[in-house]
Length: 266
Length: 258
Ligand SMILES: Nc1ncnc2c1ncn2[C@@H]1O[C@H](COP(=O)(O)OP(=O)(O)O)[C@@H](O)[C@H]1O
Ligand SMILES: [Mg+2]
Image (cartoon, rainbow over all chains, first blue to last red; front, side, top):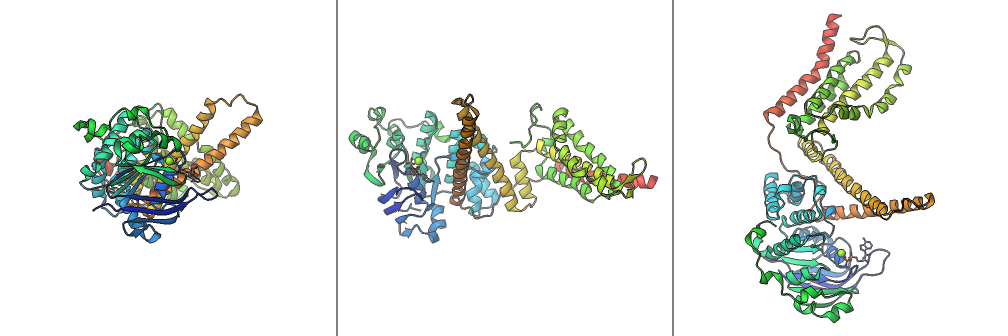
């Protein structure tokens, strides 16, 4: 299935009792693209992702192809759109990692044996096989993140929304995550749209086809990362700093193809 | 995660740990039957039952002192519940195996005390040798209502989150050393921390709810299947049935001897 094109038009939203956060935000996300949304702390990146899965009521419109994000379509759209929270700990709520990963599948009506097989397969792909029977709260931050990602990926979404996915990961875990996300369409053998919010500009540099800069409730710029992230003046004007390390090096993925072993284990 | 963890116990693994949680749950249910159903005059037969979990716990490597402590902790509460009865009902009664006369109130007293000891003992043996997740899924597979298992499970899960949040806040405070401050300031700090704690747990619970709905949760909670019961498990269930009948057998024999 081809992922839907996401059209956000004149999006307005504010938390109750707080000033409006988005005042008429427009954004398109193309099928299969990896879009990085960058912006300073508190500019509304996480909130934007929540709005994309209809967790809060908002003004304006959000369409997935021709389907508007409205209450009657919510359940169907949520089956196609997966969101991985910034705080993985609250996303894992079943007694064991395996059961947590199988949770969504069972809710979709899959038979327990099938759900377990698919959950185990996903855990193996993501390198958490050995932790399948552990309670989620005993995992480290990075392991929790991968478990949360497994629970969403196992449902085979066309659109994957990731909120600060590299937070709390060590360099190796971070590189494995980048490789996994970059490789995802090939692994699943179909295009997957990825929308990634991050203030980890390196991640966006390495992973995304396009970066969009969010500030003041608007998308103020949108361009390929090696254009946008090199524009030091633009970034500075919106509270971000281009990491010097990044400007001096090419994107890691094309430059150093990961060895086979690592690919297997995230 | 074990609900009850004996700190000095050897590696938490014994034959009892390996028994299927379903079998262990059934064993506890078996033990509960005589506690509820045994005729009052046969109450002392429960002593036979109380010996069983003790024996099992010691045999499976749990340290006796820790067992005793865990077992006896609830006893004051039980005594509080039971202690009224001798005053409430002074009519004469007969208790099998008891030397001499007794009042009905005292019979009831012994009944409550012994039932509690038996149930606590069996529950102890259960939770000390079974992880909480295993216990929950066993409950589900034995046909306990889904909502019950779900609520228990979430509470357990949420408890861990709460404890973590609480510990974080306390550690953050300790690291910035508010301890030496005057009492009034400490109280104010504690009140502030409590508000923080509540606000955070509220935010957490909202996130958990979001995570649930996004993954298609609609109030039902299907669970993964389990392997079939093995011979050891059936042996444990059979033992449970036999044990449950023991007090009746004993009281029958006592009555026969009389
Ligand atoms: N549940 C909430 N209730 C009220 N305000 C919130 C809530 N969540 C976030 N905010 C506020 O909304 C703004 C945007 O938050 P967020 O989307 O988390 O930003 P970002 O992810 O870009 O750091 C912040 O000012 C934050 O304080
Ligand atoms: Mg955020």
